[in-house]
Length: 373
Image (tube, rainbow, N blue to C red; front, side):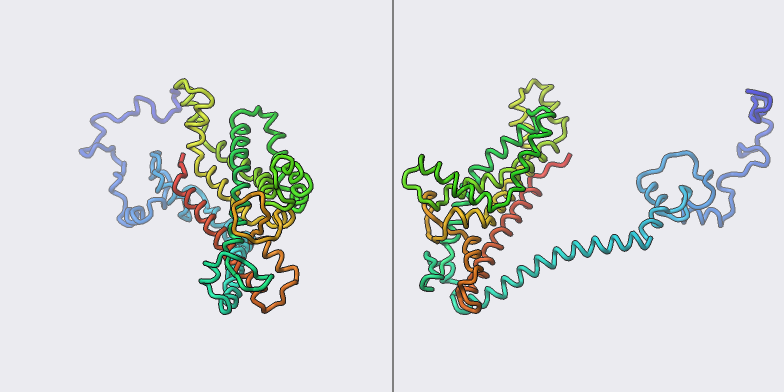
């Protein structure tokens, strides 16, 4: 200490300098402030002199109150200044309008399908639509059962799932856990290039390349068949499974895998017993989203699967899916106002409900098995 320091040891108060309350003459007790000042501090602990608050740390609620209270000892409330500016308000309104537009678009599509389907069901009984096992809408108009179209859609989707799910998951595990960084940098973008190929190209690839190869292996395979169409649809949705599953695996905290390695687990044990269970919700969601994409595929099945609605699960036969029938009707062969034309809205409504159910299932699985880290 220097002589200029105002708190030299010889300046310390002695016993004779202290009053009965332990204070020197002229000191002011904390509770001796005017009543108005104490009332103001009780009402707003962050108003008044900053030195009265002391150096103690604030709780989480105290910090939030301090930041949101204006004026504050922490400075002006810049958050309110930013969010209340005309530019930020305009951006918020624009983004909100985009979100509302997507909702109204979905509601509008559903409303059109429901209204137009009522016109179809006014002439064709819903019971007949759901129980008949044949579909001859454009032949004689005697059979209006949805099941042949549904079975064709289901067959194509199952074949696509058999291709896309195991191969996509294997590719995801390799890219997330085994591939060196330099390999992953070019492998994932190359795999995702498949998602940018037009589906009409996939369709002609199935018809002109895959089908002739399969005819050499599978006897009795028709030119238009569900097998080649399903295989190529699976190839089309494979990047979706691989990319989403790989993202789910990489989102698992590294501490889980490091803990397993510390216990002596091997690489395959860590992947199979730690990483995959931890990323289960995202992986299953990728499966369901890929199957939903396969259900809604149109051009591949129009070109390669044929246009014969039949209730069968034979992959070597020609089938017609719900999307392929809608594409066929919209070519203009069915006059507007006829049951044949109105049937496309009924089939579209059934397809909409099917994909909606799968999306709801995917969201429920994500909520059920989602892990919080």
